[in-house]
Image (cartoon, rainbow, N blue to C red; front, side, top):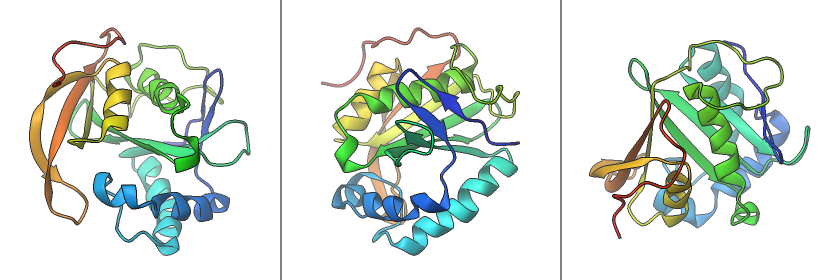
Length: 198
């Protein structure tokens, strides 16, 4: 399908571009990424180039993954990324990150919330252009993060995900790690739910 741009009151979600490669490489070289992200490590400029020129493009073209660059304005500087990967049938997996300078400002709940609205079809993002129909219209979105990734967990809780347990999962090429898992279904209220571990 053709890429879809989304807007929120503060943000523009559009496609990662060649001009974003340097910032992607810089942000993903943050040592935090080695501990909590599935991105390759060490992360290089070549990884960022392949991601933008091949991975993002093929994901949209083959209806298997939608990836957005998060910006404060059209053509603005890259703040981070959010993606939605179709897994099986009517389920998808949500992933996201922000560059270090942009964390702690409430950006990710807003950006990821717009993606959930679009994917689950139960919100009202203001798309530009008109929203594309269905390949990514799913009934359930899953989230997972390394146990201890409090920032990612905070976003998932704010977006209304239901905690479903701790299970091991691969962290890129760095072996298996214990992961928090959660889900959000179409029509579920976007509010914090009980059941998350202390």
